Length: 122
Length: 198
Image (tube, rainbow over all chains, first blue to last red; front, side):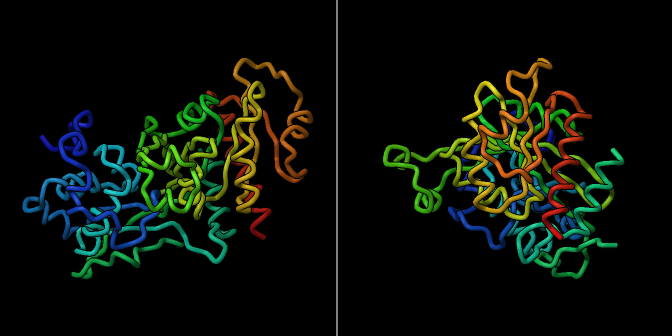
């Protein structure tokens, strides 16, 4: 059974959260909480030899999940997930897609139109 | 087709996985006003909870007063997800409206489409901090008055006056339990954001 199958007993329940990150609280990359994460083919083939927390993330992100969802499923604080995901992305195990970055920090009109159309089609 | 690949996490081997683009909307309001209900009414997943720890860094930036500054605090935040197509996923984040959670709002509103301020007319003042914040940060927002029992103890104009929001801020009535009502609120916000984006 994988860790992802036991939501009631996440990584956070068993370990001091920042022990997972070697005491680091700052991720290698800036990852907003809605950043979407997906395991790369390289990450998938690496699963058997990954450490527990990396394995859990690589296993659950075969379908795209946000940083916030990973945090909720693993029951590990956001800050810890950011560090773990940042490390794994830097190793090529995960691909990330960040929110659109614009000069004023808001989605541009084209993206808003796509959101509007998507909502109307619900 | 507007499909973005990661720029920050290009795998060393050059093999990329395709990842949808995330967008988010913030749902703010006072305690028990129905934020999680609203998120859950349209989310394709049961609303999830994540915890953000109030770090020393946050405490340094945001003045939360002497007593609170001593201990570290975690804030639970409920959120949901709406897939808007193969390459676009909308996240809805419910955030506590109290001033003392301001430290996390900067992070939350960064890159957001905008915010829905959910209001209970019996406790109007609960939403003041959120309204102030979104106004000061120039975040597009709408006010949605939650009518739990189909009754409204104030009329809409009274609410607008009490909140002192600018006339161009849309103010709507909603039922947070109802999917169509929530969808209408989201559409209202996106259209408002589009007006502000041009």
